[in-house]
Image 1 (cartoon, one colour):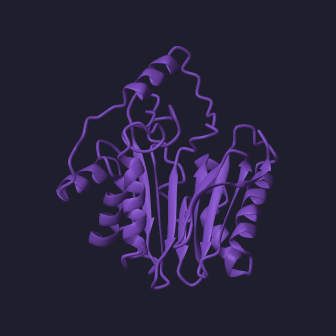
Image 2: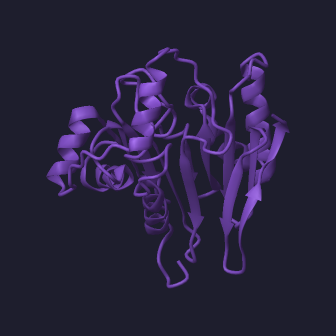
Length: 269
């Protein structure tokens, strides 16, 4: 972006770094598998024109975010899933990979001893990477990608591939991303709520906080192991973040600074 690049390219390339990190246990092919031992990936991307693309339940492709961009740019659709998404990716020249993380497979085999499906949100790795950016032309874009909850039911999709839940961009107002327990984010259309709050005058920080408080209220305060965090960025370059529990970190970079920030939160662990 410092060299004049646009926000869409920046967010795609940014999250590809994490997708391609084979040691990451919550994003990409290195992520924890589902209960049947298969790693399935979800991703979405959205530009300043409200054009968007998404893939869900995608297997064997290292960079699902780039497949999502191809869906946006080369099809009349927004979302492709499963075998259809894989067939599309291969038709666009993406390479099939059978990589499986030894560490993730070891954890899965250990989980099989009890096979107890009880989602527990990791306090450091929040199952998703979301990235939003504002470029020199004043345009916003965002990307979101994940391997989903550890040992999830086969076929499960969270918020990450869903426009308006895991990601939303409105170039008149701002952009937002979510991470954490996807089911909870979907129930309040989380990222779109954050953007709409900014439309009505909330700062990015205030909007993220209000969305988290709304989420807690909608779940009757039954939020044990329900970690959710939001990040938001408005047209003026102001940004904010907020999470249910402590331990949510945000990487922020502008032309002057680069830093990792501990998000404000509703309650400590």
